[in-house]
Image 1 (cartoon, rainbow, N blue to C red):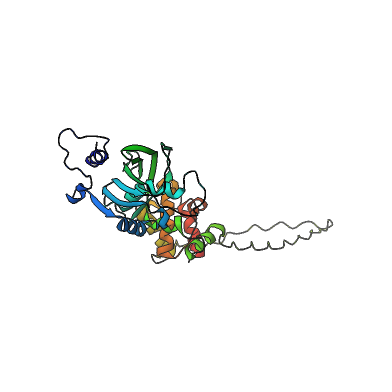
Image 2 (cartoon, rainbow, N blue to C red):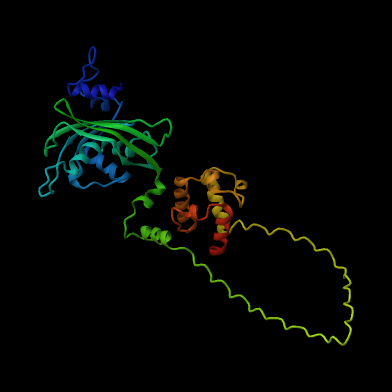
Amino acid sequence: MSVLWRAFVDAIGILRWSGTPPCGDPGAFAAEGIANRFSHKIAYTLFSSSLVDYADKYRGMQAVVMNEFEAFAGITLKDVQGGGYYIVPPYFIDSVIHLAGFIMNVSDASDTAKTFCVTPGWDSMRFARSLVASQKYRSYVKMIPTEADPSVYPGDVYVFQDGVIMEIVGGMQFRRYLRILMNRFFAAPDSSVAMSYTAASFSSPAVPAPAPAPAVSQPKPTVYDIAKPLAPRPIPVPVPTNAPIPTAPAAIDSDSTSSKALVLIAREAGLDLSDLVDDAAFAGIGVDSLMSLVIAEKFREELGIVVAGSFFLEYPTVGSLRSWLEEYYS
């Protein structure tokens, strides 16, 4: 059991230390340098700069104490007038559980400058009491990376009031992505970035119309005079010719777009450039769906090539990709 958890539950009267508690308030760990403490304003400023800017009615966290991927927070739910009719308002739910998203996107235990985390959801959400506006609560969460995939973090969120567990969100999960994919996931529908993705998703390069086949003239039948004997057909004499001189292979232009694209793919996938032979399938050399999105973003940022996320399904081999690039970007 973690020190932060034991101090937290001790402070709300659920668990008692054997002996003298090291501190009466778990927030004292922040003063001792064991954990970090954030005020309401600082917490949401950091949240906004990292991932999401919440509207005021969603900003229930009043103070946060965090140690790596573990944290607790004091919560006060906003009293929203005319906010609609809900069994449980979504801004109440978000206020008491988005502590998990906060630590995954703000904690100094991960490189938040290069990555961000989003959640596909949770397994269960159980309430023992109703969430009430202007009431005070406390939330606790600890996220732990899985051994099978360290980019996936599961955890449970506990919500307390007056020393009693009143809500549990079980099996909440976050997945870590490279920050370069942020615009692809969250670009506004009317932004230029989103429009470029839409155009790339639904348009394909124009394919030139096939040239009309040349007309084939019908040979005229040959008429023979049966009264005259046929002359013997001459035997062709072979004419000596010089053996063809082999031509040297064309030099690869390292400044061409196709060459730069292959260098970029090798760099991002951790491959040698020699691995990218024409018949190599991207799926077979480690370019999975997530890597495809990263490379597509790198194409846009570094080479000015905007492609859809399904690009490597349309051009599954190195040779097909090279041919496409040489045809349209040479």
